[in-house]
Image (cartoon, rainbow, N blue to C red; front, side):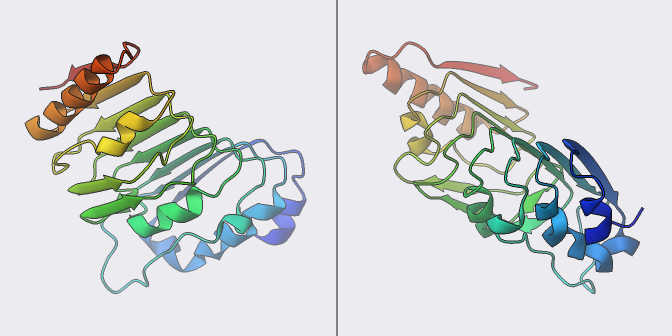
Length: 206
């Protein structure tokens, strides 16, 4: 089924959508801008089958936040290899509560999180990425409750700013390097020193 404007307009009550693309479909990606016509969509899962997009293909960028469904609550991206600066666009989604980034959904060594975005995000999963340095200034996730880095083998540390998220309850690291684990432990100890015993750290897959 082609993801055209007319197709989306014919499904005005659709709340969940899953889309899987292959490298051969790469030139058809204009459908992303048409998602805005799915006014009741709450859950979107988009998978690109090859996270290492061939160099002869035009790089794919996320559309502006205004092109996303206005009621989107849960978003899963996999294999899309977006640049980390495009996370600023997701940070503007007004109702987004759950964000799962799997299998090189974003690629690159540096991600700078900025204060003022992700106003409703409660759950963030970052899985299988080449991210090395994650910078978070201020409190970029004011409602974040759970952070799950998985197979982030290059990530050096959990940024200090994450510890300032006022509602953070749990960080679960799976198959992450020792320095990232240590930084999470340090965040927990610092919070405990400030009288906040609500943050738990879980380490798996070591």
